[in-house]
Image (cartoon, rainbow, N blue to C red; front, side):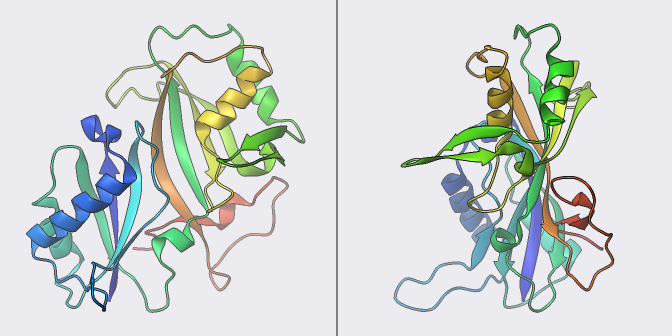
Length: 252
C-alpha cells in the first residue's frame, strides 16, 4: 500500500538540505513504528519518494512524501504516529492512502505556488510592483536559463502560471512584511522555474540587482494535473490552464 504524507518545514530547519530531510524521515519512520516496506537485495532501503525538493532557506507548508507500507493503521493513526516523533521545524499536516496505480509524488509534480517577500531594510525601486505586473503581462519573456553545464534561452512567460501582488504576505509567519508576491510556477522535473529566478530576471530589466539574502520564500502548495477522466475546463487563454491543477493530496 502506498501512502502520501503532506508536511511543513519552517524555523531553523529551513537551512537543512533535501538529503538531510530524507535521512531525517528515514530515522523518524523507524522511531514511529510504522510498518514501512523495504527494497530487496543486498542493501535494502525504505521505499519512499519525495516530491519537488525545497531550496535551502525556504519554508513550506506544501511538502510531500510517499511511502510504501506493509500494514496500514488508518490515515489519522499514521499521522499521529509520525507527528509524535517530529522535531520543531517539521509538522505532519495530512496523510492519504493512495489508490492503486497512482504515480509517485516526484513523477506527479506539475506546479508549485509560493509567497515571496523582501526582508526588512531591502531598498527597492519605488514603482517595482507596477513594473513587475507589466513584466508578467508581456506576451513573451525571453531569458537565458543557466544549468550546471549549459545555458539556453527560454520563454519565461510559459513557466509562470500566475503572478500577483499580495499585501501582508508574511504577516502570519515569522516576519511581518507589508508587500509580497504570489507566484504559481512550473515545477516539472527539467522545466522547473524558481521564484528567485523570476524576480532576478525582472529586476535585471530595471538595471537593479537584489542584495544577497533579500528574499523570503514560502511554498504554499505543490500540484499535480487532474486525470483526464476527472472534471475539468476548456483550455484558457493563458500560458497554462491552471484549472487542471490540484494539490498532491486532493479530494478527501
